[in-house]
Image (cartoon, rainbow, N blue to C red; front, side, top):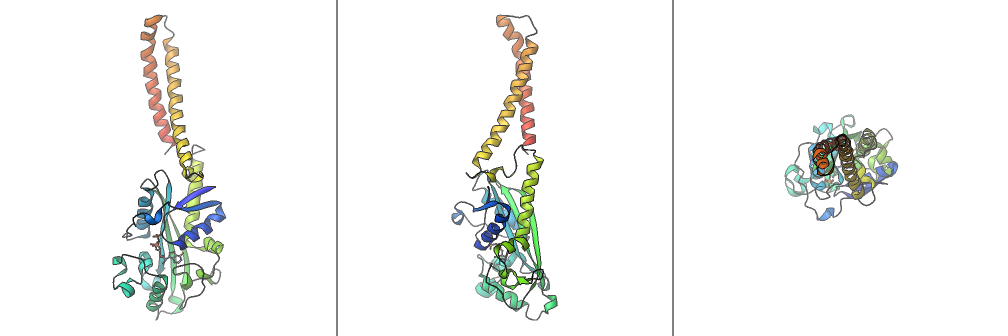
Length: 297
Ligand code: ITT
């Protein structure tokens, strides 16, 4: 079963990913030792900037592994897109007398919801439109490989409904099925939510890239092995080395055949045959290296 490493401090997100993963036969795991790693400062101005930063920084702690992180939040049209990227700290002015972008820590869900309700107090039902946004980034060894965006359109209620989920779920009414996100089962949330949508795009990307590589190894190589991916990474390297060796041996053999056309014997034979053999072996090495780089991109 594929294993996907998620970098998040939010247990609600982990539950969402686990719910989405079940539908696709993948296993979700946290980055090992996540709680003792330094916190990444989310100072980006967009969901994408923050998601990339989290995925890149946390992926440095697990060399060779693909790490997924998301940055997400609620955009409310009547509030010009707020709380947006500041969703996790929206109540900072109430609790810490600081603007959300200056706060050092997340504020609790109830306080965030209370601020949303206060800001929307005089906004009519028809104008309470908004969306959840999730940008998911996948990175390896400090470099982002791809990002995926998922959204879910809804209406912000004037009081909370439901006890499942986390964050703004109890205020977010999803007309398509007539429930708030806090009234959904884990399976329903993975089907309709912004996070579920982004996660499906990510899985499609993994499968698409695997096809493109025509069996030479997929970007999910590191996710497939139950040992944390090490065996797949090793086998990819082993395949590379094998290809270089085959090309080198092939060219050396051709060089030997060309060389053995001469009638030399003893030291003369080596003197005559070694230079073309070595020359072709070098070309083989070069071609093998170029070829293996091409297929492992
Ligand atoms: P990590 O950065 O460690 O992943 P976080 O909670 O700080 O955890 P974000 O910075 O992405 O994550 O903030 C997302 C906030 O947006 C989250 O705390 C919720 O308040 C809100 N949010 C995002 N997705 C949500 C969802 O599916 N349901 C309810 N609220 C959500």
